[in-house]
Image 1 (cartoon, helix red, strand yellow):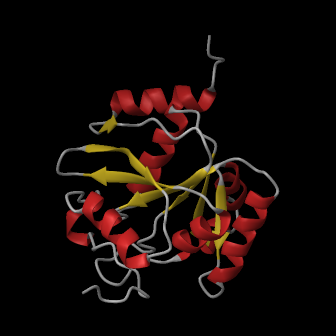
Image 2: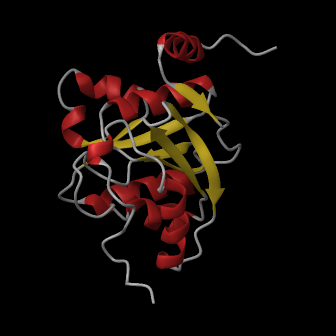
Length: 195
């Protein structure tokens, strides 16, 4: 029998009231990166948090450092947040790698779109963390066209950035995010054009 979990109870209430439907929501058993994409609205965070709580999944997530100032700081950290100073993103990657090296088990939810605008490439931090820490990447999604969200396949990155991103692009091709007008194609800035 499962122990009572306050976060699972909150998630159950959330899903009962929500118009969205969680699908394929089983988080992997092993630690790894979970992409939250397309990231087009602040609701993406709420949905992914409720999905993780529904599964009792130990999660951490990256958020801009301004979310952690003042009274919000302790709350955001309690929810699993790791502040990101966009002026020094490599420090965050190093901190996450240090936590993994120390044996902390968690799913790191990353929104690779970075911001909620409809332009610009994806941030490559998720790719670097996954490769350097030897972590698999699970493709989490939000799709307003079907009013569904969940986690899709888990993949191992090969180091061939173009090929890996082709797999990711194929999965997200029909996923619109919460605000389809802000959706952008999954593409990293350092990708080379493929023949």
